Each structure stands twice: as structure tokens, then as C-alpha cells.
Picture 1 (cartoon, one colour):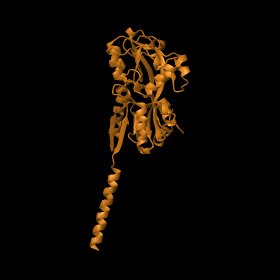
Picture 2 (cartoon, rainbow, N blue to C red; picture 1 turned 90 degrees about the horizontal axis):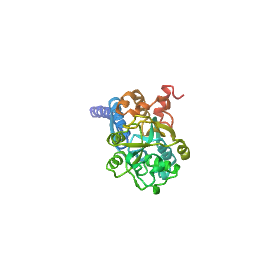
Picture 3 (cartoon, rainbow, N blue to C red; picture 1 turned 180 degrees about the vertical axis):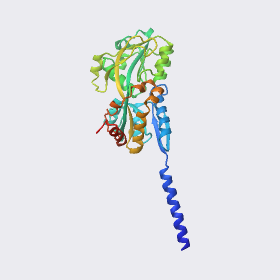
Amino acid sequence: MKLIRKMGVIGAIAAVCVSSAVWAAPKFINILTGGTSGVYYPLGVALSQIYGNHIEGAKTSVQATKASVENLNLLQAGRGELAFSIGDSVAAAWKGDEEAGFKKPLDKLRLLAAIYPNYIQIVANKDAGIKSLADLKGKRVSVGAPKSGTELNARAIFAAAGLTYDDLGKVEFLPYAESVELIKNRQLDATLQSSGLGMAALRDLAATMSVNFVPIPADVIAKTGNAAFQAGVIPAGTYDGQDTDVPTIAIQNLLVTTTAVSDDVAYQMTKLLFENLDYLGNAHAAAKAITLDKATNSPIPIHPGAERYYKEVGLLK
């Protein structure tokens, strides 16, 4: 009888230990961003700090990547819990657009929040004489990493302007920082990048040498036939020496999570995002454009945890 009682006590203690271990299991939140010189990365770092400080048991990490397309494929494969992506790449991922880098529909993706817009920013060494899209003919141009969201944007914009990569003198498939370094070294004439305004690499370039920002006119935007492309403006003074507004394309960025993330964690991530916009704005000025009223604009379903928050604040019924 004593042995039975003793075993019963041991079993109870073990049950409590197991229960505590489950309750205290760490919540891993790996945030997939982009290149370290872009906008996604500093905002990802800021979010990791917010979540690490305010979500009990959270173990956060930030991963630098090739951005949108890679991020979405990593999410689907279970190698991240939250990712930054441009909206048109998310739409392509949901459909399984192989040309855009998605071999099959990524059905595990769920929206956490629509955030700030990206702007297509085409910047050229002023000495190259590039003032319009047509002037890119015969020039050396970087269009972003292969099949990245930026590079897919470049293809669409050039096609709408009557250009192909064959019309360019040389095409490089490089992200922000590498593109800027080659322009500084006179090894490239221009680069097309999709990013939030005031991106560090372009600020550095404009502060180092005289550059032109190439406009994308409304008729080219219309010819792309892409509903995700909206008319936007790079306001005068965004970069050194940029004295006039530059018309261009704006595309909404999204924070994307997956069905593998619990409703509770997704709820907390959404709530903390919108309760800490000032903190994010200090990490990068692009975050100052994040507004709650646009948070649910998305080509994919909203995560139930995020949906709960949006219902609480009256954005959804």
C-alpha cells in the first residue's frame, strides 16, 4: 500500500512537471526580413524586441534574407513565424505563380497586417544622363535579386514601358547595398529598387554622388495591368539633391504569418504591432505610414488571431 501511495505521489509530481513544461514551452518567433541595408531588416529587429519583451516565453530571432519571395517560401516550409513581403508577391504565392518563384500555391500563408507602402525607386548616376525609362536603353542596370519581389516589379515596369532586359547594356541581379556600391564605383549606371522611402542604401548613394530619380508616369502604371500597382510619389527632399516630387509606383507591404502560429501568439503579435507604432517609426521612418484602417487589405485570409484583434478594435465585425 505504501509503495502504491509513493508511486501515486511520484506520478502526481511528474504530471505537474510535464504540465509546467508544456505551459512554459518557449514560443519561437523567427522574423524573416530582407537585406540589412533595406527597410524590412530594422523593422524586423524592432518587432523582435517588442515581442521578446512583451510575449511571455517568446524566443525571437531576425533573419536577413532575399526578401519577399524567399520569405514566403520559408514560411510555407515552417522555417519562420512572421515575414515581410510586398503585396503582389503574396498574391502570386497564394495562386502558385511559378514564374514569380512559387512552384505551388502556398496555402499556409495568413495575413497578420497590411503595413506601409513600398515605392519603386529608380536611381541613376547623374553623369549617365538617365532622366526617363527610355534612357535606360543601353545602360548598366541592377534590378534586384533574381526573382525577388523587386526583380518581378522591374520586369513588369520595363515591359509596360516597352523595354526588355535585352535592351539594357548590362543587367545585374543584386540587392540594395551591392547595387549602390557598384554605382559608386562607376560599374553600374542605375538601379531599380522596391522599398520604403528613405531607404539607407539610397540615402548613402545620394549623399555620396549626384543622382537622378527616374519617374514612372501614370500611363506606364496603367499598362502594367497590375491592380497592386498604385500611383505614388517620392516627395521632394526625401534624398539629398532630390529637389522635386518624383511620380512612381506604390505597392502595399504585408506582414505574413502561417497557420502553424497559434491564435494567441498571432493575436499578441498584431496587438503589440499597433500599440508600438511610435517605436517602429523610430526604427525606420517608413513605419510612420502604418495605419490601422488599412491593416486588413490583403489577397490572403487573415489569421484568426489577428482577426480577433481587428474585431476588438472595431475594424472588422
